[in-house]
Image (cartoon, rainbow, N blue to C red; front, side, top):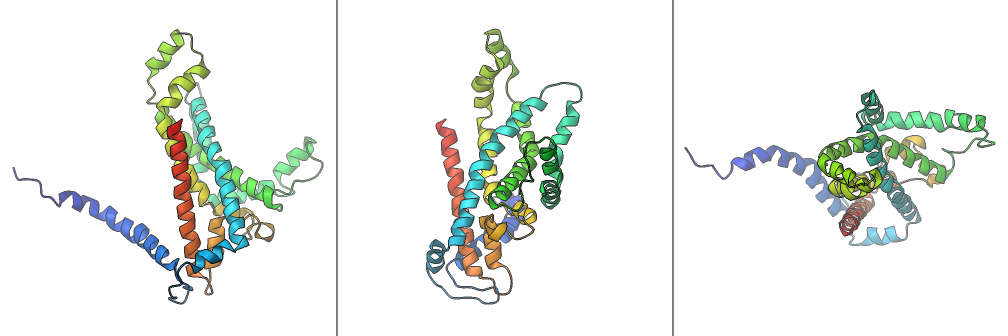
Length: 289
């Protein structure tokens, strides 16, 4: 028997580390450096200290995008944490045909966000199916401007994000629910505990770590939203750009030959810090409970 060589684990890790360094760590470090320069798309730029961040504080469009992104996180994260759990509890039941409904709920996950966005754009147009149904049921007297009103467009994009994420997080919850000891539910039922009491006293504490994971993933996904707003606003960011997210704004600033790479990098760095901050807040809130 020969002894284990010290570098053997590193050989196994090397491909993954190389990919991470090339496509994640390296670009992040480059973005962090560019954030303190006035670099353009075609120029190297010079060190400008905190100038980009000072400019950011005076940029109304940046704060509009930041506010939309924060609203996106506040609305979408609670929905993406709770609704997939309820859906998982529903499809977990062993009833005939439940496999069909599992596949239906999961199907949006495999669809491209661009395709999903186009489908919902057609559905939410003034003469689309949603307005037609609401008018036919006499819920509204005229078509709702889902895609032409800044706030309605933003909430329509949130709906699409939540709708598409339901199936993915449902599968995560199904895996967690499978590990909840059935004997605990049986013992609690014998003691007279109802389904709601067993859910709060047994199920939720058991899957708390999974809920935390789903929450953090939802924060990250909501903070970097782009495709939904881009597709549903036809690339405009809503009327007057009032529905654009922070990623949308970064793309607008850094795009093209005249793109301000340094300023876009500074906004990217702020987005990263905010995403980490949201995740830490969610993590601490979950631990306190």
